[in-house]
Amino acid sequence: MTNCLILFLQPSNHVLTEDIIFREVTPDNRLISRRLLTKTSRAPRWAEKFLPAHMAQKAFIIEDSIVDPESRSMTTLTWNITHARVMGIEERCVFRVNPDNNNWTEIKREAWISSNLYGISRAIQEFGLARFKSNVSKTMKGFEFVLARMQGETPTRTLAESATVKARETALAAKEKAKDLASQAQKKQYV
Amino acid sequence: NSVGEGCTDLKREYDQCFNRWFAEKFLKGDRSGDPCTEFFKKYQTCVQKAIKEKDIPIEGLEFMGPSKEKADS
Image (cartoon, rainbow over all chains, first blue to last red; front, top):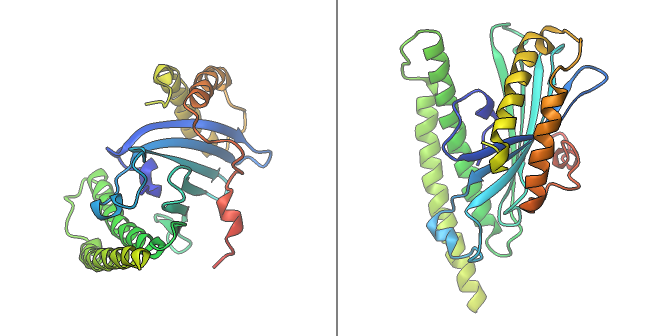
């Protein structure tokens, strides 16, 4: 749904607006900020049947961040404040200097996916997880590509390539499973 | 672009000031203070008004809020 590398990569087509709505330097010299993002909201066709008809095409997302220049680390927490009952995603990313290699930035990324819609919450969670995994590998690929270009190298096939294939397979399997779960849930309502 | 259509210019002015200060001062450990407060005030007045007008639900959200409920797993 969103990705923690949004700060480093080209702005995505899906981000419509981006605003800082709070910012402060703390007494211990860390920069804390809150950003409000609006993104286009895309639901797969099989899910559209279950969504309220008036569901907006835009989703609002909050991103809180803490930058610590002394420890050279940054933590971001991103979550959607609309559509949250359908699918809530929180993503926490920690960027820091790799302890073994000063030239590397280490990124630790965690996501929590939840849904409160009765009956099809599992289908949505499976879908969300599959999309997240697919996005991670796409993001890593994009990141490596940008870095390679910045360093004047011709981007070559990356480790992420095999991860992408695996993610695509996982996503496809999860999509089928999700569709299956969704139609089972629908059948159950009429029993 | 800003969520407040009329705020984009103020946003860009602030962003420019901020990016300069962030890269040249803040990240280098210079604690001499933020020179962008005026730009920030003008930008915030505009954008907070737009957020209210559009009914965007940003009220009462604790900073780094959701993560507090998660145990370190």
